[in-house]
Length: 404
Image (tube, rainbow, N blue to C red; front, side, top):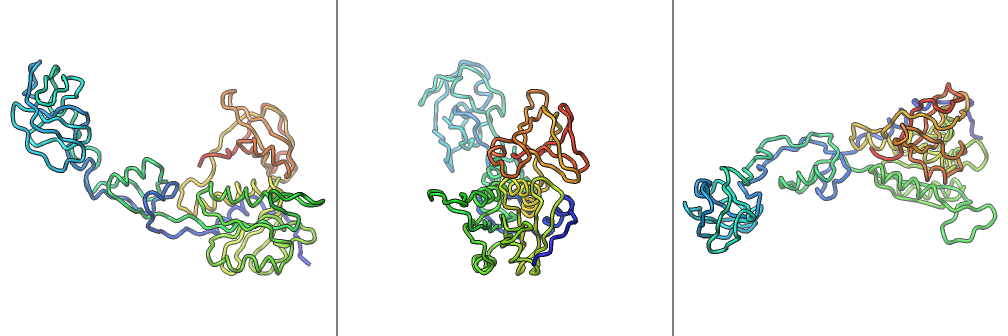
């Protein structure tokens, strides 16, 4: 028989316990194109200049500025220099080279006249406006010099950072790899889509939801569904997969009743179960089983997702090397009164409206089964454990369900 303690664990304490289970992910060399959303593990130092050579900022004509000081003037066009040309002859005084954007500026030229300031001639060009020395020329190393640290370790890699790395010729980057999470949904009552429901059956949703949450956080998720409430079958389902994952994440089977398969399977085997002082999401478990980090979440869908946001997502982000692991927060005023159970931190679903003076409206009730309310919410309203009533207009803390 499983012993259930009546002592409640504080949210912060359980959060710290979960965070301590998932260590820093190892550093791997990953192709630049696959690094979006990862964190750079080492400083990135430029080994080539950017731009790597003097090049034209415009389609036009490479000239000597002194030759077009008095306009209009006609100059013979000696050469065409398209982008990608690796060699071209020097520019002689009194001549012009037609040049395309990004093409190397020839030796002897000190400016580029944009084509709009000319007649566009191909054999002889008439220049109608003068240019200054250096005009429309991108100088070598104007952006990045060799030896410059362009990105610091710990920076999240977005499109601009990956573009810079590619422009500097890096094919791979040292990053902390994505955590590999096995998402396990248990329950003999669960069935898949397309199956006609029998009395007592429900469609499985937690696994889909939590796997998506893992991926949104930056991890890799393997989804294992429809494991029945049988301890032997539970162990048989996870045994061949444990060696390849960093975290086993379960939902359901952790309450105080009978047929709690997750609790029965892990009690006394390295995973401790507790009741956290929060609503929704009280029953929780965390520990290690055969060397693998395990976090067990309650089975009600809102409880599972709120628990993921509070406990699991920050741990995964920290393991990937992010310095900011929490969602953005803000202060907002309640549009309506709410109540909260004494001694528990409550996470109510809400809709935040910054256009109306940072007002947050509670969505649905506190019930842990109200998934439709969660689906149309963009934040969680956090009510401290020592607060039981909040009037309309009260300032509260909201935790957004999007962003970093």
